[in-house]
Image (cartoon, rainbow, N blue to C red; front, side, top):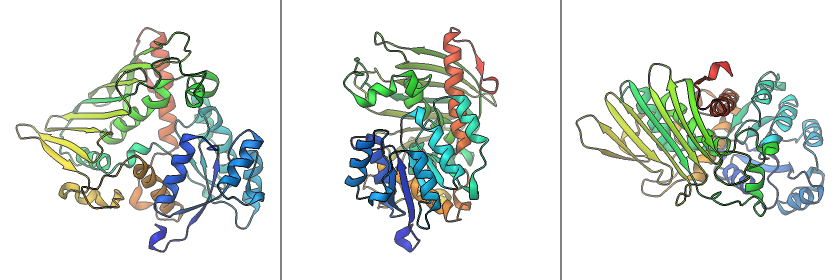
Length: 383
C-alpha cells in the first residue's frame, strides 16, 4: 500500500456525482489505504451536475468532464493522465465506459453487475485492452477477511465434500412503491437502466458470487421463481432459486427487497460431510465453524485459525475492533493497486474478474428464463 512507500495511482471516476451513494462508497474505499489519488471525473450525464460535482471534489477545471468518451481520450494523452478509472453508473452505462477506457489503456474498476445484458458482458470480453489494462469487478463482499477464511477452509478440505450451500440477501427498502421519489429505487426498478433483473441483479448476484467464491464449485443448472410483489413494478423484487452444482452439491438462494424487518441480510451457510460454516454480513467479524460431532467454534477476524490465508486478508486493526463494508471494499481497491503495480501473484483468484461478471449475467439470464418457464431447469452453459 502507499503508506508503505508505494507510489499512488492516479484515479478517475465515471458517475458517482453529488448525491450518488455508490460513488461516495468507492471514493472512501480508494482512500482508506492511501493507494489512489482521485484527480479526474465525468461524474454525471448532466453537464451542470458533472461540473458542480467535480468542483466539490477539488478537481482541476480541465479534468472535469461532461462525457466519458472525452475523458478517456484526453486522459490517455496526458503525461499525468489517470491510470485507473472507477465506473459507478447505473448498470446500462457500464459497457460503454469500460470499453472506452480499456481500449485507451486505462485500468477499469467497475461496480457490479458488469453490464445490463449478457450480450454486452460477452462483447466486453472480446476487447483487447491496450497496454495490458486490467479489469476489476467490485463484488466487495469477497473482501471480508472471514469470507477469505471460509474460502480457505473449504479449499483445504476442512469441510470435506460439499453437500449443501445456502445463500441469502434480504432487504425491505422496496416494500412499497418507492420509485417516484427515490433516485436509487427508480433506476433499479427500470428495465431500461437496470437490465432484465431487479432484486436478482442488484443483490442476488452478490449472494450468488459469494457462494461461488467460497465453495469453489461451479453451477450446472438452476430453477428459479422470480416475483414482483409491488403492483406495477416491472422487475422482480423477490427471488427463490434452486441450484445444482457440479459434483452433486445442491444449493438454495433467496434474494428479496420486500422482506420487512431486514436491512442488509446477506448470509452464507455451507455444509460438507465433515463440517459446516455460517457467516452473516451484518456481523462480519464472526463466523461459526462446526466439525461433525464437535462443539461449534466461533472464529473471529484475525484469530489464530487464520493461518496461511492471513496475508490475503488486509487486516488493518487488532481483533475486537470491527471492520466492515467500507474496509471490504477497500481491500479490493488496495489489492487491485498491487496488481496494477505488477504484484499480482499473491492475489491470484481472489479478486472478481470479467469472467465472474459474465457468469453473473449468465446467472441472471438463466433465472429469468427459468422463471418465465415456470421454474424449468436451465443450464448456465446453454444461455
